[in-house]
Image 1 (cartoon, one colour):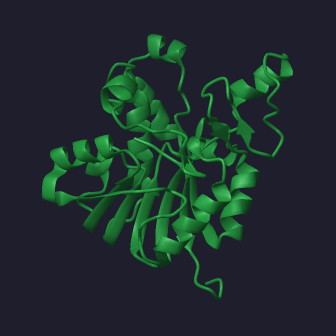
Image 2: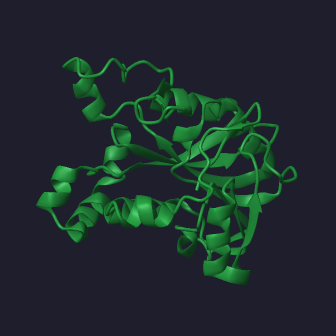
Length: 257
């Protein structure tokens, strides 16, 4: 599904990798998938003219936006994933392959955009947000999921000296033990300041995948976890403790309106 490129080096190349089967189906991530969908349904505009799914891979979330947009593009680095998306959705979508740091779109192209389960691959979030801002029209909506550094499990691991990563430090963390090339998490304060500096206004926030736990999955059925998730996403957004924080952003014009 995903990619990023710096100095001509691909850091996370999903070409030839069956992301759908290996990551989602074989690993039984039905709850996480539904948690994402609940958030997107709440945050994404009902009607859009020109929409893009950044790092959209094989189109896992396409059914959540196909009926909301007149024109849909899925962008990714992986040709394998984009081919799977095209096979699944045909003429209902366009696909575009490229580099997140140099998006192959003209300025002010889209009025709607999502980017889900991608930020953990980014070392240079400032550059990424600059590119997303560039291709989004003033007044356009971006729904973005951010890998959270400040979760409760990470706090406990830090307090009990099970981890050296300080979840209260606002600098991004790089968890190389999960991925040799880097696996980045972001403090809510850091990422929200970055949004503002990149000329975005935060319209809404949701706490997502609040019950992401193998123990809870053994205790409760997926249907029950999803019901709990639906009730928790907005109330828990105020504490920003979930593994995934969803933001609904609007691009301001040059005057800041």
